[in-house]
Length: 202
Image (cartoon, rainbow, N blue to C red; front, side):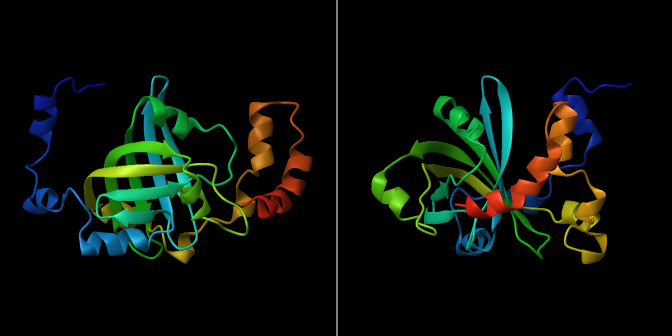
């Protein structure tokens, strides 16, 4: 196996960066970038800490994040598994990266920045959903924002219904858990999960 060991070797393989690839990067949200972010109900949220990297899926009705201003995003932390890997990373290393997907669009949006975790009562209350509130809100300061070339989503045909996988052809969450822990009760987990998820969405 031939391994690349230097930046110079790597750059020798690839052509120069196009003008568009440089020009698209801004330090704050343009009106058009704001429109794209507001249209996205899903974001992959990446953090880094002493133990390594973490990438967490986040989604919400009406947009994955709330835009506070052209340089600031608010990301509520709704119900999950309580591992809080992302939040633990942020309190030790504020660097974050986000990739937003918009159903039906092959253009993804990317943001790199720095974050803090807020438990300001008024902020938590402002995100009320079904009488519930997030336990914390991640406040993200944008360092750079840009859109991603559409080729990856086009190659994947991500939004093509004819390419959708039938969930029945995939392992259930209970089956995945049993593969990791042999004595896990997958039948009970799979039977109870839909109702539990519906009751604890927020």
